[in-house]
Length: 215
Image (cartoon, rainbow, N blue to C red; front, side, top):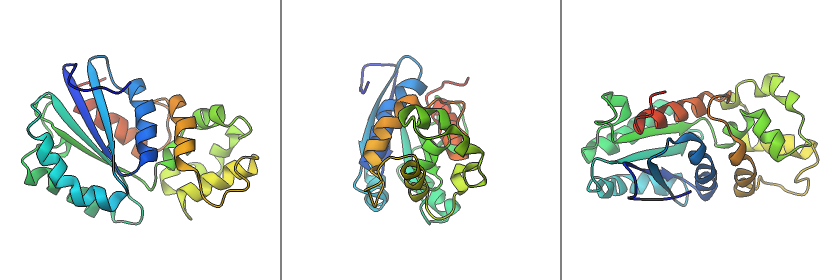
């Protein structure tokens, strides 16, 4: 489900890479209320997203008040506060009010959200979704100290997910995580309100407030 200009609210989402687009194309229909159409735009990396963000926001500024913009980016090794300030500054420069500035859904135009550290934390934060996609993974992994807070995994989030999958018998010949393939497998099973990743919960809350779904 991916659409534009056919509903009361249009959600334009900017992400840094194709795997995030795949994940949101599959997950947003489970999150958004009826009457919200969406399009996910993928960049070729976070540097390109940050470099072109102000230009893209300026273009969206002319779409009308029914269009909301969601920006999603991985923290990686950046300072979270500095990265959020850069995103907020880009919106302010083109005159678009953000969720961080408060106000009702009729005022908010932009919601900036940061994944700590990488999108794979969201998959690890929903053991039922991950184990549905990869049945040989034991759901008990989530009770281990390493995975209790998916946003705080040390040593790299995608590396931790790949190691978990390899131990279960998947991707044993892979040196790097097949991000798009895994996003396509896990995202259809993600449930908005059961994830243990704080950044996922912040994303869900921000998206709902952005489109006026204040449940």
